[in-house]
Image (cartoon, rainbow, N blue to C red; front, side):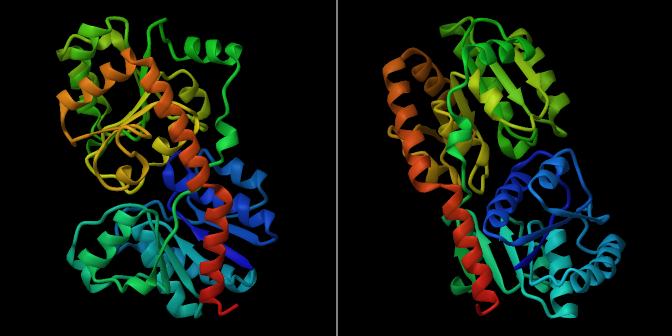
Amino acid sequence: MNILFITNHLNIGGITSYVLTLTKGLKKKGHNVYVASSGGIMLPRFIEEGAVFIPVPIKTKKEVSFKIAMCEFSLSGCIKRYKIDILHTHSRTTQVLGELLRRSDRIPHIYTCHGYFRRRILRRLFPCWGNKIIAISEQVKDHLISDFGVEENNVSLIHNGIDIESFSSQGIGIWNKARKRLGLGDGPVIGIVARLSDVKGHRYLIEAMPEVLNEVPDAQLLICGEGKEKENLIRITKQLGIARNVIFAPEAQGTAEVLSVMNLFVMPSLKEGLGLALMEAMAAGVPVVGTSVGGIKTLIQDGLTGLLVKPASVSGLSESIIRLLKDTALASTLRENARRFIGDSFSQTKMVDETEKVYRECLNL
């Protein structure tokens, strides 16, 4: 098959990781992969895996945009030139573009829903769901069916896949180098890897730190990511008088290094489709705490693979963090259970195989 992925950008993030995983797996199966995007820092990784890059000006959040019309004209020619068999899109704007191409070029269109949508009028009038939808979690699938009336037989549940071997234990030399590069001291590290957006709940984690520091004075909070909330979050750390114990680090092309320095990973999201960074932390053997929302509930079985707290609960976060920092036996048990759970349930091979199956169904192969 000749497969065309359309994504807004190839910068660090869950969608880019998802598309890269599929690219690697599908190339190994002998398929040709083309990626249409505005580009980004991760582009060289796609080239290394043998994908053909098609530059298009699709970096927009507007559903009605001149950029989408430009991309349709450009990609219509590419579809014919490369004899594309199937389109696969990953955001609202690329979904609209994919549907335009499906109708004009009579080509199957698959859309992966990575999270939740507001019920805006344009989405109700122009759903643009394509031939088939892939939902990354049971909660996202339910959202599509209950909030948008999507027919259940048009939605395939396929979880994100993780290469657990890439998160095997790091050597002590690499661990020390990473701590030094990130500006960390000797105390335990509580970490989060996520874009700095209010929906990710960073502020509640920061607000939980004063109580954590009362019990574990040398604890450090490592926040990895970029986003519009950064200045506000820095301001909160200063107001709470904990700025010296909170380290902000930029996005990393690979999370294995930053995860290797963490004693505990926290995902305090208010909404979450599944939580790729959380899955990676579990695969890396880092004990986890998460909020009981969305796909996080699929990953964390409270007291078995991690600890769950209510969303926006500062006290719940601080109590769980302190508990795992002090109870090393519990932390070890949760760590081993989580790593085994991810390895058994969220393999890359399974993700690629099931996605390929959806392609074949749409092509009647």
